[in-house]
Image (cartoon, rainbow, N blue to C red; front, side):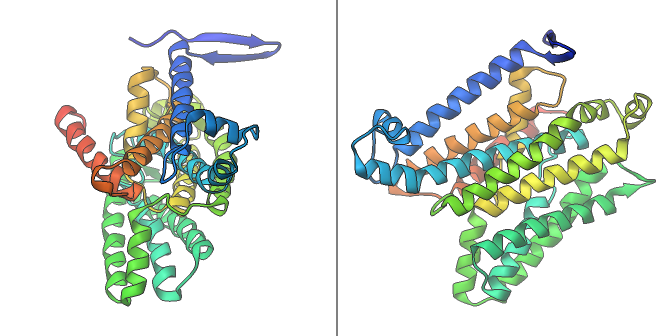
Length: 344
């Protein structure tokens, strides 16, 4: 049963909102804040939540906590929040446009495309972090443009066709990545493999600030076109009759989703599972017919923070890269999804 929508009128403006979706978003935000405080206190030197909060607000007298929390753990935590939010929102857009539960950037090749540019920079030019991040963004955008052009058929891009073309392009680029790794020397191959694992280790403000800025710049575009994409889920013909410019809306939202994916990949490397599962869990929790942009972003942030906590507290003193943790969780989730759903 679809939750009842309510209208909030402020002068000449009217805002349509759904109470259940709003409650879910508030609970996810609170859960994210709790996980963030726990993560800021987790590490070789542990701090209590009270010490973490005192350090964040500058009211504590623990110089060690102030230095570790503010300079080392805070940028790592913020990187995780905005990378997860970017991937969650990007996955929501891709799944709505393709009308397919598998329509996420890591499934249809965009994350692999971003990784190709980064690997090429590391292996061919021995580039540093900044050049690697820029190459990941440019390569991700180029991959999206290629998939979009190949998926065009009769001036339209069908949902399943977009997914299948993306899977094919991703497979080709995965082969290219393997060739680049084979032709590199040992040190370059190790550096590339570390980047490919996806990690939040050694993340500084140089990683967190671009992730925050990229998310804040792209989000207004997604919110502006979000209602139109919801109409696209009814079919191109129906959306066109309601006055939606179908291909323009699809192109703008694909570029926005690819931008979010590229920014997230540049900040933390390839992170699987978040873009796939975040939107689906958010849609189930909110039961909203609209595209769950905000709730998917919050769910993505919560999932990545949870995965980071699990990876740091993994038994046998093993500190797994976040990409491996989310990849394993994503594999189990994908198997469960395939066995439960008849529409995939």
